[in-house]
Structure formats: C-alpha cells, structure tokens
Image (tube, rainbow, N blue to C red; front, side, top):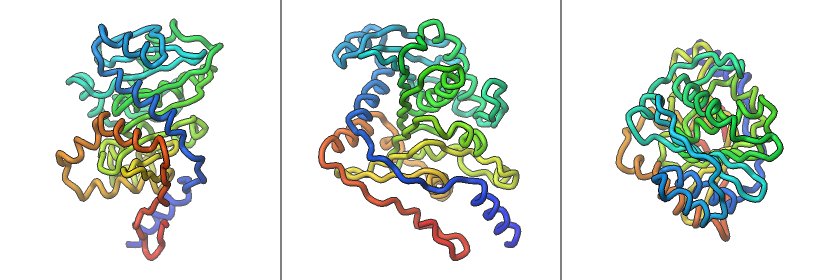
Length: 289
C-alpha cells in the first residue's frame, strides 16, 4: 500500500493538472470534422466534395507500406492536412504496434506504430508544403494520432502549425513527450463511450517506471443534447481507468464512428452548454474534483 501511495505521489508531482479552457469554436471543429470524414472517400469523389466545402485539393497520397491515406487541401491561404483513420489490416498493424520507442528527430518517445506512419507521411508531403502559409491538421482515430505527430515534426522544422483538431484519437507519446510539445495548438474531440482515445490503457510496468502513455492538448467531450465538457492533464489520463473495467461493445464502436461525431458536433453549432467535468475518482481520500 505504501509503495502504491509513493507511485501516485510521484505521478501527481510530475504530471500537469487541469488548466483553464477557452470556449471551443464548434464551427471550426465542424469544418475539420467534415475534412476528417472526407479522408474515407474514394479518390474520384474527394475533389468534388472538397470544392463543395470551399477547399482546393493540392495533393492526395496512399503510403504503400502502411496503407495510410491522406490529402492536402488549401483554402483562404491555409494549408490543411487530413489523415484517414484505420481502414484496413495494414492500418490495424500500426495501431497494435504499441511499444514506446525513442524518436531521434523529436527527441521523445512515440507509439512505434503511429510514429512510423507519421514519419512516412512527413517525408511524402514535404515537397508540397509551403512555410509561407499556416497549416491545419486533422484526422480521425489512427489519422488523428498521425496528425498530432506530423504537427510535432512540422513545428520542429519551422512550419507554422496553427491548428490541430482530432477526433477519437488514441495516445501517441508519454509524459515527457507531451510536456515537450505542450504548446501544440491541439484540440482532441471525443465522445464518452469512444474507448479509442483511452488506449493504450495504463500499464503497471509503465506506472512503475513513470513512463505511461499520456495525452496532450485540450479534450472536448461531446455529451449530446447540445452539451459538452472539457478536461486535460491528469483528469484526461484517468478517464482511461474506467476502460479497464468495461467490455467493449457495439455502443463503443458506434461512439467511435465519424458519423456519430458529425451528428453530435452539428448539435453544438447553436446554444452549446458547457458542463463542468467530474472524474468522480478519489485516491486515498483525495478527490481530483
């Protein structure tokens, strides 16, 4: 018991607590959600769909080894990178390659599968990007994870990363990595029953070594009925503890679909109501709320 208390104390010391939030721009979130959804379209319909959204397709690519698909579009002097989520076996293999491995470019540890996928996209997209225009990045699920790591690479290389909005995004790095890139303009949009943002789950070995997977950015939780809540830091991490006691179901799969995200985001375009986030978690008599 004493050992567990010491572990918890160390975690609380090294990890950031929740910060104050700005009100989410749900119009911008909706626009990025549509672009994330567009990544699942067939190539012959994508360009027309982007034109309907005021975007011009600049480049589209499918990385052969990982089958990661993405596109680059442009509108009003802004470059937008959108990366597709898990859509085939090769993508699923990236999801399952869970080990945290050092990335020599970023000098942090990354989820090995997401890191390799992001590095391939980064090398592929560089010839089409301009440092003279701001960059927005978005993606769903695996695509969101790759978008966050791409934003790290681009920021480090001097590109103007203005916005990163992801949907149902899993974790990509550890505490140290999240702290190093805590200035990344990241908003992670999730739904309460989507378990993908809660993985990889907490590991006893990682807790012992104080090397657990850790989210960065602000987490916007869509509650339905025009309601939402926000969290980050340790409260965001502890949402994953509830996953360890639940069995994935059809409800979880439905909660992860882009169609669900789009429907819930559409409800928040007018009269959105923020609800204070509560963990309902106590450690040895200490409430995180």
